[in-house]
Amino acid sequence: MSWFNYYTTSGLTTSVKPPIRRSISFPALADNLKINDWIHAPLDELNIGQVFSSSNNAIEQSFDQDSYLVAYETATSTTATYSYIDDNNNLYFRSLTDVNAGSRPDGAYYIYYHSDNIQYISLIGSNYVRTVNPSGSNFMGSPTGSGSNLVNYYSHSVVAGSSNVRVSQITYLGDPGIWVSGKTQTAGAKVLGNFDGPKLVIYGDKGPDKGKINLKIIKTSATTSGQSVVYTSNGIDLYNTNAVVDTPMFTIDLKTQTSVTGLNAYDDYYGSFSYEIELLPAKNQASSATGLSVTKHTYSKNYKLSFNKEEIDPSISFTSTGVIR
Image 1 (cartoon, rainbow, N blue to C red):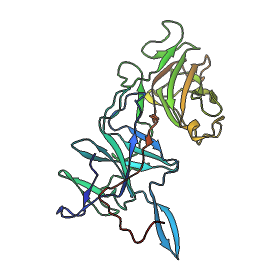
Image 2 (image 1 turned 30 degrees about the vertical axis):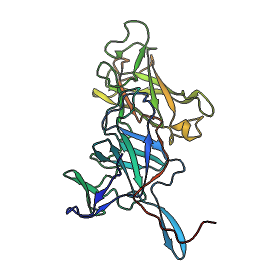
Image 3 (image 1 turned 60 degrees about the vertical axis):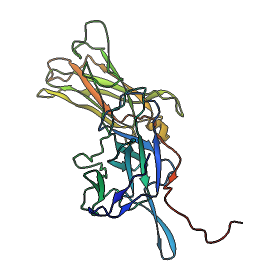
Image 4 (image 1 turned 90 degrees about the vertical axis):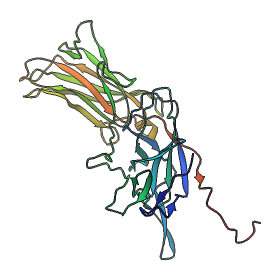
């Protein structure tokens, strides 16, 4: 693949190449990746985003959110995408490709780094041109706000029924006939789903005819302490004065929820889980029935991405000022 470059002005007279890059390694995917999904890779001990400066005769290290850029490259094109490094040292970036389960992207994703303000660029025609920091167009992702740069920690959506575009599915358990179009009023009926941590939102219906549920989350990945129930919540009330469809009925961040147990390491929190919902015979006194409808759940799929060996721009020349002894 060619090396990403951008121009300092719209006159396209001077180009700049970031000095260092790493390709992002994709295994054969466990589920369907869609365009605009936000996916992540752990940086571990890599110092991507770290910059060094001299102050008072000392070297100081700091973090610079605009000193790296993720780009998708094929034999004929290079396309920048939004990216963001979060407080847990994960690189999140927005997918530019659809990839089916069992496959890998046709091209390659690279992260270029140690290049100040590299995120401040804009595509003009077929070339990327530098913009002005901090007001100019850029490819910096943000965990807040709105727009195409908003980091979506819940972009992997598993939908009930035939409209689902993922391999993962929502499973409805119980005697034959108690579930109709994903809805039931039979106590003891259960719903199962799989997700990757740490964040999860389960959607369903709330209304004047809805009941109460018990919910538990089971760690299914065999990391550290192994498989176990890590969270339970009993008696979640789905009653609402007015009917509301496909609305968040349960939200959790396993890293911040204090009652979560048995999770200690990164691979625990970002590992594989399942949830189980059971409809109870009890209900809110104001409810007319014990209804339950689960419509989808959303999370960030962990595709087990990693980083390959660091590469240095081959056009950079080094001059020796002495001899190696």
